[in-house]
Length: 517
Image 1: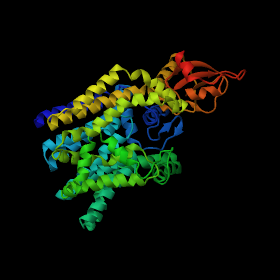
Image 2: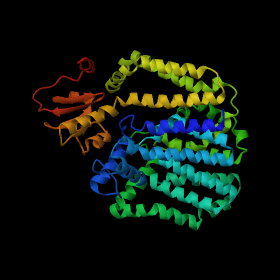
Image 3: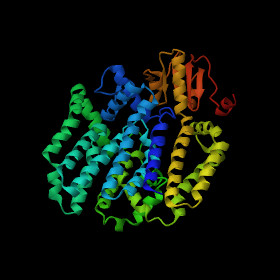
Image 4: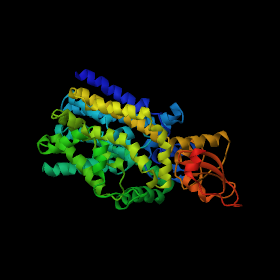
Protein backbone atom coordinates (compact mmCIF):
# COMPACT_ATOMS: atom_id res chain seq x y z
CA UNK A 1 0.00 0.00 0.00
CA UNK A 2 1.32 3.42 -0.92
CA UNK A 3 2.31 5.96 1.71
CA UNK A 4 -0.26 8.37 0.23
CA UNK A 5 -3.07 5.88 0.90
CA UNK A 6 -1.79 5.28 4.44
CA UNK A 7 -1.91 9.05 5.03
CA UNK A 8 -5.57 9.07 3.98
CA UNK A 9 -6.39 6.34 6.52
CA UNK A 10 -4.44 8.23 9.20
CA UNK A 11 -6.58 11.30 8.52
CA UNK A 12 -9.74 9.16 8.65
CA UNK A 13 -8.71 7.59 11.97
CA UNK A 14 -8.12 11.03 13.51
CA UNK A 15 -11.44 12.32 12.21
CA UNK A 16 -13.44 9.37 13.60
CA UNK A 17 -11.63 8.72 16.88
CA UNK A 18 -10.88 12.30 17.93
CA UNK A 19 -13.79 14.33 16.53
CA UNK A 20 -16.88 12.47 15.26
CA UNK A 21 -17.25 10.69 18.62
CA UNK A 22 -16.77 13.75 20.85
CA UNK A 23 -20.46 13.91 21.82
CA UNK A 24 -21.10 10.16 21.81
CA UNK A 25 -21.46 9.97 25.61
CA UNK A 26 -22.13 12.37 28.47
CA UNK A 27 -19.21 13.43 30.65
CA UNK A 28 -17.72 10.62 32.71
CA UNK A 29 -17.04 10.96 36.41
CA UNK A 30 -14.88 11.66 38.20
CA UNK A 31 -12.29 13.49 36.10
CA UNK A 32 -14.29 14.79 33.14
CA UNK A 33 -17.04 15.99 35.43
CA UNK A 34 -14.57 17.71 37.76
CA UNK A 35 -12.67 19.56 35.01
CA UNK A 36 -15.87 20.62 33.28
CA UNK A 37 -17.55 21.79 36.47
CA UNK A 38 -14.45 23.76 37.47
CA UNK A 39 -14.58 25.46 34.06
CA UNK A 40 -18.29 26.23 34.55
CA UNK A 41 -17.62 27.74 37.96
CA UNK A 42 -14.99 30.05 36.46
CA UNK A 43 -17.84 31.78 34.62
CA UNK A 44 -20.08 31.53 37.70
CA UNK A 45 -17.48 33.23 39.91
CA UNK A 46 -16.15 35.60 37.22
CA UNK A 47 -12.72 34.34 38.30
CA UNK A 48 -10.36 33.01 35.61
CA UNK A 49 -7.32 32.68 37.87
CA UNK A 50 -8.51 30.38 40.66
CA UNK A 51 -10.58 27.27 40.00
CA UNK A 52 -13.33 25.96 42.24
CA UNK A 53 -15.18 22.66 42.31
CA UNK A 54 -18.64 22.65 43.89
CA UNK A 55 -17.80 25.94 45.56
CA UNK A 56 -14.52 24.73 47.09
CA UNK A 57 -11.00 25.64 46.02
CA UNK A 58 -9.55 23.21 43.49
CA UNK A 59 -5.75 23.13 43.25
CA UNK A 60 -5.48 19.83 41.36
CA UNK A 61 -4.15 21.29 38.10
CA UNK A 62 -2.80 24.58 36.74
CA UNK A 63 -4.94 26.82 34.60
CA UNK A 64 -4.25 26.25 30.89
CA UNK A 65 -6.74 23.45 30.18
CA UNK A 66 -9.49 25.42 31.95
CA UNK A 67 -8.77 28.48 29.82
CA UNK A 68 -8.92 26.42 26.65
CA UNK A 69 -12.15 24.73 27.70
CA UNK A 70 -13.63 28.12 28.62
CA UNK A 71 -12.68 29.54 25.21
CA UNK A 72 -14.14 26.52 23.45
CA UNK A 73 -17.44 26.81 25.32
CA UNK A 74 -17.68 30.51 24.47
CA UNK A 75 -17.45 29.57 20.78
CA UNK A 76 -19.45 26.31 20.68
CA UNK A 77 -21.65 26.49 23.79
CA UNK A 78 -21.39 24.65 27.09
CA UNK A 79 -21.64 21.05 25.92
CA UNK A 80 -19.63 17.84 25.66
CA UNK A 81 -18.27 18.72 22.23
CA UNK A 82 -16.86 22.05 23.36
CA UNK A 83 -15.47 20.75 26.66
CA UNK A 84 -13.67 17.87 24.93
CA UNK A 85 -12.54 19.76 21.82
CA UNK A 86 -9.29 21.18 23.30
CA UNK A 87 -8.14 17.64 24.09
CA UNK A 88 -9.01 16.44 20.59
CA UNK A 89 -7.09 19.31 19.00
CA UNK A 90 -4.09 18.66 21.29
CA UNK A 91 -4.15 14.95 20.39
CA UNK A 92 -4.26 15.86 16.70
CA UNK A 93 -1.24 18.14 17.07
CA UNK A 94 0.49 15.44 19.13
CA UNK A 95 -0.04 12.95 16.28
CA UNK A 96 1.18 15.58 13.83
CA UNK A 97 4.30 16.12 15.93
CA UNK A 98 5.01 12.38 15.87
CA UNK A 99 4.58 12.38 12.09
CA UNK A 100 6.88 15.33 11.34
CA UNK A 101 9.55 14.30 13.84
CA UNK A 102 9.65 10.69 12.63
CA UNK A 103 9.74 11.87 9.02
CA UNK A 104 12.71 14.08 9.86
CA UNK A 105 14.83 11.42 11.58
CA UNK A 106 13.65 8.31 9.66
CA UNK A 107 11.28 8.46 6.66
CA UNK A 108 7.71 9.34 5.74
CA UNK A 109 6.34 5.79 5.70
CA UNK A 110 7.52 5.16 9.27
CA UNK A 111 6.15 8.59 10.20
CA UNK A 112 2.64 7.74 8.96
CA UNK A 113 2.72 4.36 10.70
CA UNK A 114 3.95 5.84 14.00
CA UNK A 115 1.18 8.45 13.98
CA UNK A 116 -1.43 5.81 13.06
CA UNK A 117 -0.32 3.56 15.92
CA UNK A 118 -0.66 6.50 18.30
CA UNK A 119 -4.11 7.56 17.07
CA UNK A 120 -5.56 4.04 17.29
CA UNK A 121 -4.01 2.85 20.58
CA UNK A 122 -6.57 2.10 23.30
CA UNK A 123 -5.32 4.46 26.02
CA UNK A 124 -4.74 7.31 23.59
CA UNK A 125 -8.32 6.98 22.38
CA UNK A 126 -9.48 7.32 25.97
CA UNK A 127 -7.62 10.55 26.79
CA UNK A 128 -7.62 12.15 23.33
CA UNK A 129 -11.24 13.23 23.60
CA UNK A 130 -11.64 13.42 27.35
CA UNK A 131 -12.31 16.79 28.99
CA UNK A 132 -9.15 16.54 31.11
CA UNK A 133 -5.58 17.90 30.95
CA UNK A 134 -3.70 14.77 29.85
CA UNK A 135 -3.93 15.07 26.07
CA UNK A 136 -2.65 18.64 26.25
CA UNK A 137 0.14 17.71 28.65
CA UNK A 138 1.29 14.78 26.52
CA UNK A 139 1.40 17.03 23.48
CA UNK A 140 3.69 19.50 25.27
CA UNK A 141 5.91 16.73 26.68
CA UNK A 142 6.25 15.22 23.19
CA UNK A 143 7.05 18.59 21.60
CA UNK A 144 9.58 19.48 24.28
CA UNK A 145 11.33 16.11 23.88
CA UNK A 146 11.35 16.26 20.08
CA UNK A 147 12.83 19.78 20.18
CA UNK A 148 15.40 18.69 22.76
CA UNK A 149 16.53 15.71 20.70
CA UNK A 150 16.84 17.76 17.50
CA UNK A 151 18.89 20.29 19.48
CA UNK A 152 21.19 17.53 20.75
CA UNK A 153 21.79 16.27 17.21
CA UNK A 154 22.01 19.61 15.37
CA UNK A 155 23.27 21.88 18.16
CA UNK A 156 21.01 24.74 17.04
CA UNK A 157 19.98 26.81 20.03
CA UNK A 158 16.54 27.63 18.63
CA UNK A 159 15.47 24.02 19.27
CA UNK A 160 16.67 24.18 22.88
CA UNK A 161 14.68 27.39 23.36
CA UNK A 162 11.64 25.74 21.78
CA UNK A 163 12.01 22.92 24.29
CA UNK A 164 12.03 25.42 27.16
CA UNK A 165 8.88 27.03 25.73
CA UNK A 166 7.00 23.73 25.47
CA UNK A 167 8.09 22.81 29.00
CA UNK A 168 6.70 26.16 30.14
CA UNK A 169 3.31 25.44 28.56
CA UNK A 170 3.39 21.93 30.05
CA UNK A 171 4.11 23.44 33.47
CA UNK A 172 1.06 25.64 32.96
CA UNK A 173 -0.97 22.53 32.10
CA UNK A 174 -0.07 20.06 34.84
CA UNK A 175 2.87 21.35 36.82
CA UNK A 176 6.28 19.82 37.67
CA UNK A 177 5.87 16.58 35.67
CA UNK A 178 6.31 18.62 32.48
CA UNK A 179 9.79 19.62 33.72
CA UNK A 180 10.68 16.28 35.29
CA UNK A 181 10.33 14.06 32.19
CA UNK A 182 12.61 16.00 29.80
CA UNK A 183 15.05 16.93 32.58
CA UNK A 184 15.50 13.35 33.80
CA UNK A 185 15.68 11.92 30.28
CA UNK A 186 18.37 14.38 29.20
CA UNK A 187 20.26 13.82 32.46
CA UNK A 188 20.50 10.04 32.01
CA UNK A 189 21.16 10.38 28.28
CA UNK A 190 24.06 12.76 28.96
CA UNK A 191 25.53 10.36 31.52
CA UNK A 192 25.45 7.50 29.00
CA UNK A 193 26.95 9.75 26.31
CA UNK A 194 29.51 11.11 28.82
CA UNK A 195 28.52 14.68 28.08
CA UNK A 196 27.33 15.89 31.49
CA UNK A 197 28.96 19.32 31.15
CA UNK A 198 26.82 20.05 28.10
CA UNK A 199 23.74 18.94 30.02
CA UNK A 200 24.49 21.45 32.81
CA UNK A 201 25.16 24.22 30.31
CA UNK A 202 21.89 23.57 28.48
CA UNK A 203 19.77 23.24 31.61
CA UNK A 204 20.96 26.61 32.88
CA UNK A 205 20.60 28.38 29.52
CA UNK A 206 19.58 31.90 30.56
CA UNK A 207 17.46 32.62 27.49
CA UNK A 208 15.65 29.33 27.90
CA UNK A 209 14.93 29.95 31.57
CA UNK A 210 13.58 33.42 30.77
CA UNK A 211 11.28 31.97 28.08
CA UNK A 212 10.04 29.35 30.55
CA UNK A 213 9.36 31.96 33.23
CA UNK A 214 7.59 34.34 30.83
CA UNK A 215 5.19 31.56 29.83
CA UNK A 216 4.62 29.78 33.14
CA UNK A 217 5.25 32.25 35.94
CA UNK A 218 2.52 34.94 35.50
CA UNK A 219 -0.36 32.64 36.40
CA UNK A 220 1.51 31.12 39.36
CA UNK A 221 2.19 34.63 40.68
CA UNK A 222 -1.44 35.66 40.14
CA UNK A 223 -2.70 32.51 41.87
CA UNK A 224 -0.34 33.02 44.81
CA UNK A 225 -1.50 36.65 45.01
CA UNK A 226 -5.13 35.46 45.26
CA UNK A 227 -4.73 32.42 47.53
CA UNK A 228 -1.30 32.73 49.20
CA UNK A 229 -0.02 29.69 51.11
CA UNK A 230 -3.25 27.79 50.48
CA UNK A 231 -2.11 27.50 46.86
CA UNK A 232 1.43 26.42 47.78
CA UNK A 233 0.15 23.77 50.18
CA UNK A 234 -2.74 22.64 47.99
CA UNK A 235 -0.91 22.43 44.67
CA UNK A 236 2.81 21.88 45.23
CA UNK A 237 2.78 20.06 48.56
CA UNK A 238 -0.45 18.07 48.31
CA UNK A 239 -1.08 17.50 44.59
CA UNK A 240 2.55 16.88 43.63
CA UNK A 241 4.88 15.89 46.48
CA UNK A 242 2.30 13.98 48.54
CA UNK A 243 1.00 12.19 45.45
CA UNK A 244 4.41 10.57 45.07
CA UNK A 245 4.82 9.78 48.78
CA UNK A 246 1.31 8.51 49.52
CA UNK A 247 -1.72 6.96 47.85
CA UNK A 248 -4.33 9.60 46.98
CA UNK A 249 -8.04 8.73 46.90
CA UNK A 250 -7.22 4.99 47.19
CA UNK A 251 -5.34 5.12 43.86
CA UNK A 252 -2.65 2.67 44.83
CA UNK A 253 -1.08 -0.44 43.37
CA UNK A 254 1.90 -2.75 43.52
CA UNK A 255 5.32 -2.17 41.99
CA UNK A 256 4.08 -4.12 38.94
CA UNK A 257 0.92 -2.03 38.50
CA UNK A 258 1.95 -0.55 35.15
CA UNK A 259 2.93 -3.81 33.44
CA UNK A 260 -0.68 -4.83 32.63
CA UNK A 261 -1.57 -1.17 32.09
CA UNK A 262 1.01 -0.87 29.30
CA UNK A 263 0.19 -4.24 27.74
CA UNK A 264 -3.52 -3.41 27.61
CA UNK A 265 -3.16 0.31 27.00
CA UNK A 266 -1.09 -0.17 23.83
CA UNK A 267 -3.65 -2.50 22.23
CA UNK A 268 -3.95 -3.39 19.39
CA UNK A 269 -0.18 -2.81 19.02
CA UNK A 270 1.06 -4.77 22.06
CA UNK A 271 2.90 -7.24 19.82
CA UNK A 272 4.92 -4.38 18.30
CA UNK A 273 5.84 -3.17 21.78
CA UNK A 274 6.97 -6.69 22.71
CA UNK A 275 8.96 -6.89 19.47
CA UNK A 276 10.73 -3.66 20.44
CA UNK A 277 11.56 -5.11 23.88
CA UNK A 278 12.93 -8.30 22.31
CA UNK A 279 15.14 -6.29 19.92
CA UNK A 280 16.07 -3.49 22.29
CA UNK A 281 19.81 -4.32 22.43
CA UNK A 282 19.98 -4.03 18.67
CA UNK A 283 17.63 -1.06 18.36
CA UNK A 284 19.30 1.22 20.95
CA UNK A 285 22.31 1.46 18.67
CA UNK A 286 20.18 4.16 17.06
CA UNK A 287 20.58 7.36 19.09
CA UNK A 288 16.89 8.24 19.14
CA UNK A 289 15.91 4.74 20.25
CA UNK A 290 18.36 5.16 23.13
CA UNK A 291 16.97 8.60 23.96
CA UNK A 292 13.35 7.44 23.64
CA UNK A 293 13.98 4.27 25.67
CA UNK A 294 15.36 6.35 28.54
CA UNK A 295 12.27 8.55 28.20
CA UNK A 296 9.83 5.61 28.43
CA UNK A 297 11.61 3.59 31.13
CA UNK A 298 12.12 6.64 33.35
CA UNK A 299 8.40 7.39 33.27
CA UNK A 300 7.54 3.72 33.80
CA UNK A 301 9.88 3.29 36.78
CA UNK A 302 9.21 6.67 38.37
CA UNK A 303 5.44 6.17 38.51
CA UNK A 304 5.84 2.52 39.48
CA UNK A 305 7.59 3.81 42.61
CA UNK A 306 4.98 6.52 43.20
CA UNK A 307 2.49 6.10 46.03
CA UNK A 308 -0.41 7.28 43.86
CA UNK A 309 -0.95 5.23 40.72
CA UNK A 310 -3.37 6.02 37.92
CA UNK A 311 -3.36 4.32 34.49
CA UNK A 312 -2.82 7.51 32.49
CA UNK A 313 0.43 8.47 34.26
CA UNK A 314 2.45 6.01 32.18
CA UNK A 315 1.19 7.61 28.94
CA UNK A 316 3.75 10.38 29.54
CA UNK A 317 6.30 7.87 28.23
CA UNK A 318 4.28 6.41 25.34
CA UNK A 319 5.25 8.82 22.54
CA UNK A 320 8.60 7.20 21.64
CA UNK A 321 6.98 3.76 21.74
CA UNK A 322 4.83 4.59 18.72
CA UNK A 323 7.97 5.44 16.76
CA UNK A 324 9.63 2.22 17.96
CA UNK A 325 6.53 0.35 16.80
CA UNK A 326 6.96 1.79 13.31
CA UNK A 327 10.55 0.51 13.34
CA UNK A 328 9.50 -2.89 14.71
CA UNK A 329 6.68 -3.16 12.12
CA UNK A 330 9.26 -4.02 9.46
CA UNK A 331 10.52 -6.92 11.58
CA UNK A 332 7.10 -8.59 11.98
CA UNK A 333 7.09 -11.99 10.25
CA UNK A 334 4.04 -13.73 11.70
CA UNK A 335 0.72 -12.00 11.03
CA UNK A 336 -1.00 -14.21 13.60
CA UNK A 337 1.41 -13.21 16.38
CA UNK A 338 1.02 -9.59 15.25
CA UNK A 339 -2.76 -9.88 15.78
CA UNK A 340 -2.73 -12.21 18.80
CA UNK A 341 -3.01 -9.63 21.65
CA UNK A 342 -5.97 -7.98 19.93
CA UNK A 343 -7.60 -11.37 19.19
CA UNK A 344 -7.32 -12.28 22.89
CA UNK A 345 -8.82 -8.91 23.82
CA UNK A 346 -11.85 -9.47 21.58
CA UNK A 347 -12.26 -13.01 22.93
CA UNK A 348 -12.35 -11.62 26.48
CA UNK A 349 -15.07 -9.15 25.48
CA UNK A 350 -17.08 -12.02 23.97
CA UNK A 351 -16.70 -14.21 27.05
CA UNK A 352 -17.27 -11.38 29.55
CA UNK A 353 -21.12 -11.38 29.47
CA UNK A 354 -21.23 -15.11 30.19
CA UNK A 355 -18.75 -14.73 33.04
CA UNK A 356 -20.72 -11.87 34.57
CA UNK A 357 -23.98 -13.77 34.31
CA UNK A 358 -22.53 -16.94 35.85
CA UNK A 359 -21.00 -15.04 38.77
CA UNK A 360 -23.64 -12.36 39.36
CA UNK A 361 -24.45 -13.64 42.85
CA UNK A 362 -20.86 -13.19 44.01
CA UNK A 363 -20.70 -9.44 43.32
CA UNK A 364 -21.57 -6.75 45.84
CA UNK A 365 -24.95 -5.04 45.45
CA UNK A 366 -23.65 -1.91 43.70
CA UNK A 367 -21.61 -3.90 41.15
CA UNK A 368 -24.51 -6.34 40.72
CA UNK A 369 -26.89 -3.54 39.80
CA UNK A 370 -24.33 -2.08 37.40
CA UNK A 371 -23.99 -5.45 35.67
CA UNK A 372 -27.78 -5.82 35.43
CA UNK A 373 -27.87 -2.40 33.75
CA UNK A 374 -25.43 -3.70 31.13
CA UNK A 375 -27.36 -6.92 30.37
CA UNK A 376 -29.65 -5.46 27.65
CA UNK A 377 -26.59 -4.36 25.67
CA UNK A 378 -25.12 -7.86 25.54
CA UNK A 379 -27.38 -8.59 22.59
CA UNK A 380 -27.18 -10.04 19.09
CA UNK A 381 -25.49 -6.93 17.74
CA UNK A 382 -22.82 -7.08 20.47
CA UNK A 383 -21.92 -10.69 19.75
CA UNK A 384 -22.37 -10.32 16.00
CA UNK A 385 -20.12 -7.31 15.54
CA UNK A 386 -17.41 -8.57 17.90
CA UNK A 387 -17.57 -12.00 16.26
CA UNK A 388 -17.13 -10.37 12.85
CA UNK A 389 -14.15 -8.35 14.10
CA UNK A 390 -12.62 -11.51 15.56
CA UNK A 391 -12.93 -13.36 12.25
CA UNK A 392 -11.42 -10.62 10.08
CA UNK A 393 -8.60 -10.23 12.61
CA UNK A 394 -7.60 -13.87 12.17
CA UNK A 395 -7.39 -13.93 8.37
CA UNK A 396 -4.07 -13.19 6.65
CA UNK A 397 -3.54 -10.01 4.63
CA UNK A 398 -0.61 -7.79 3.83
CA UNK A 399 0.87 -6.23 6.97
CA UNK A 400 -0.47 -2.79 6.09
CA UNK A 401 -4.02 -4.07 5.52
CA UNK A 402 -3.85 -6.04 8.77
CA UNK A 403 -2.68 -2.89 10.62
CA UNK A 404 -5.62 -0.90 9.19
CA UNK A 405 -8.10 -3.61 10.23
CA UNK A 406 -6.70 -3.75 13.76
CA UNK A 407 -6.55 0.03 14.10
CA UNK A 408 -10.09 0.79 12.94
CA UNK A 409 -11.47 -2.21 14.85
CA UNK A 410 -9.90 -0.79 18.01
CA UNK A 411 -11.50 2.60 17.34
CA UNK A 412 -14.91 0.97 16.95
CA UNK A 413 -14.61 -1.24 20.03
CA UNK A 414 -13.34 1.59 22.22
CA UNK A 415 -16.23 3.88 21.35
CA UNK A 416 -18.88 1.13 21.29
CA UNK A 417 -17.90 -0.30 24.68
CA UNK A 418 -17.55 3.24 26.06
CA UNK A 419 -21.10 4.00 24.90
CA UNK A 420 -22.35 0.85 26.62
CA UNK A 421 -20.54 1.68 29.87
CA UNK A 422 -21.99 5.19 29.79
CA UNK A 423 -25.42 3.67 30.47
CA UNK A 424 -24.28 2.61 33.93
CA UNK A 425 -23.35 5.99 35.39
CA UNK A 426 -22.77 8.79 32.85
CA UNK A 427 -26.17 8.75 31.13
CA UNK A 428 -28.18 8.22 34.37
CA UNK A 429 -26.40 11.16 36.05
CA UNK A 430 -27.09 13.44 33.09
CA UNK A 431 -30.74 12.37 32.98
CA UNK A 432 -31.10 12.99 36.72
CA UNK A 433 -29.77 16.51 36.15
CA UNK A 434 -32.23 17.02 33.29
CA UNK A 435 -35.06 15.90 35.62
CA UNK A 436 -33.93 18.47 38.20
CA UNK A 437 -33.90 21.27 35.64
CA UNK A 438 -37.23 20.23 34.14
CA UNK A 439 -38.96 20.24 37.53
CA UNK A 440 -37.26 23.47 38.59
CA UNK A 441 -35.63 21.91 41.67
CA UNK A 442 -33.37 24.54 43.22
CA UNK A 443 -31.45 22.51 45.79
CA UNK A 444 -30.01 18.98 45.71
CA UNK A 445 -28.03 17.05 48.32
CA UNK A 446 -25.49 14.51 47.07
CA UNK A 447 -24.98 11.55 49.40
CA UNK A 448 -22.40 8.75 49.08
CA UNK A 449 -21.79 9.87 45.50
CA UNK A 450 -19.16 11.98 43.76
CA UNK A 451 -20.45 12.89 40.30
CA UNK A 452 -19.55 16.50 39.45
CA UNK A 453 -20.99 16.07 35.95
CA UNK A 454 -24.39 16.38 37.67
CA UNK A 455 -23.42 19.94 38.65
CA UNK A 456 -22.48 20.65 35.03
CA UNK A 457 -25.78 19.46 33.57
CA UNK A 458 -28.01 20.75 36.38
CA UNK A 459 -26.07 24.04 36.45
CA UNK A 460 -26.01 24.13 40.22
CA UNK A 461 -23.83 23.46 43.24
CA UNK A 462 -24.80 20.62 45.54
CA UNK A 463 -24.47 20.00 49.26
CA UNK A 464 -22.63 16.85 50.34
CA UNK A 465 -23.97 15.69 53.69
CA UNK A 466 -26.36 13.27 55.37
CA UNK A 467 -29.88 14.04 54.11
CA UNK A 468 -32.66 15.56 56.19
CA UNK A 469 -36.45 15.26 55.77
CA UNK A 470 -37.58 17.34 52.81
CA UNK A 471 -34.22 17.15 51.01
CA UNK A 472 -34.01 16.18 47.35
CA UNK A 473 -31.12 13.68 47.30
CA UNK A 474 -28.99 12.21 44.53
CA UNK A 475 -27.41 8.99 45.72
CA UNK A 476 -26.48 5.42 44.85
CA UNK A 477 -29.35 2.98 44.63
CA UNK A 478 -27.63 0.86 47.27
CA UNK A 479 -27.91 3.73 49.80
CA UNK A 480 -31.71 3.99 49.58
CA UNK A 481 -32.34 1.48 52.34
CA UNK A 482 -31.20 4.10 54.86
CA UNK A 483 -34.14 6.42 54.21
CA UNK A 484 -37.87 6.75 54.08
CA UNK A 485 -38.22 8.36 50.66
CA UNK A 486 -40.33 9.23 47.66
CA UNK A 487 -38.70 8.06 44.43
CA UNK A 488 -38.42 10.83 41.83
CA UNK A 489 -36.00 9.33 39.30
CA UNK A 490 -34.04 6.11 39.05
CA UNK A 491 -31.74 4.78 36.33
CA UNK A 492 -28.61 2.67 36.31
CA UNK A 493 -26.94 2.90 39.68
CA UNK A 494 -28.24 6.32 40.76
CA UNK A 495 -31.53 7.57 42.14
CA UNK A 496 -33.06 10.94 42.89
CA UNK A 497 -35.40 10.87 45.90
CA UNK A 498 -37.22 13.15 48.29
CA UNK A 499 -36.60 12.28 51.95
CA UNK A 500 -39.69 11.80 54.07
CA UNK A 501 -39.82 12.07 57.87
CA UNK A 502 -38.92 8.82 59.65
CA UNK A 503 -42.49 7.89 60.47
CA UNK A 504 -41.98 4.34 59.40
CA UNK A 505 -39.12 2.14 58.40
CA UNK A 506 -38.98 1.52 54.68
CA UNK A 507 -38.08 -1.94 53.46
CA UNK A 508 -34.49 -2.21 52.23
CA UNK A 509 -34.13 -1.69 48.51
CA UNK A 510 -34.44 -4.93 46.56
CA UNK A 511 -32.70 -4.57 43.24
CA UNK A 512 -34.40 -7.71 41.76
CA UNK A 513 -37.91 -6.61 42.70
CA UNK A 514 -37.25 -3.03 41.64
CA UNK A 515 -35.90 -4.17 38.28
CA UNK A 516 -39.11 -6.13 37.60
CA UNK A 517 -41.13 -3.05 38.38
